[in-house]
Image 1 (cartoon, rainbow, N blue to C red):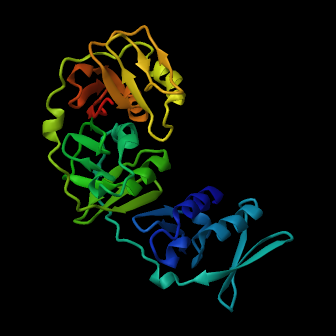
Image 2 (image 1 turned 60 degrees about the vertical axis):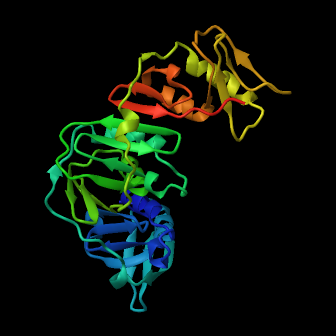
Length: 321
């Protein structure tokens, strides 16, 4: 019971703009929590006799104080008591009748076996910058899922997608990965998606944002060569010495060095073989190297294509000073 309440409490928040989103709804054995975009509905047999809405974090604190074995009671005055032994907490109830519970679809189609693992693979590349609302999402089509952030565009392949093309918001991706287990099926409506687990349903709104034409950016993989051994390690070593800590730019030079810009503070490591000078944001280059097996650095200053296990993409460099 405590694990269920804890997961629900951490989903509930006031981010949706309504006070009710700071509450969880208990409804005859269902525990419902929403952040305004995604809603999780999970069965909890211990609560099947109750229906109420209550502040999520305070309810969690009270349940924890009882070591997960609370005695619950709704008073005639419309308050919830949570007690065990000498402990007792009294919590005001909220308006459960107006708690926003989305409609769920009972039927669904099985999800590909590698759906969650591929989603985890591309999640680091989803934009967090509200300047590109379309990129704060994952696009899914018949054969792949896509993420972008203005610097990196990635495509992860998976098998057996039976649904139509959809755009999942960032909040839904975080909720799916936060569940740490793969959903069994997916059911789609015009505006929502219901991911079903054994004892839980995750419902999310779908986005109407249209993605730009990304196929042309991924059409040319170039002449891929293995990622040089030790490249990521070298970048990690020299990165702390970038003159500007807020924008760490790393150069890969034709004389075989991985280096920062010159200045009062600088660093380099040699011993590599590069055919030309290039420069990249260190953080995004490291993120790419974490998934790439091969890369074509010769495409710079155009976008640099890379390929990994079940994933391919392009990385934009930065202009050398």
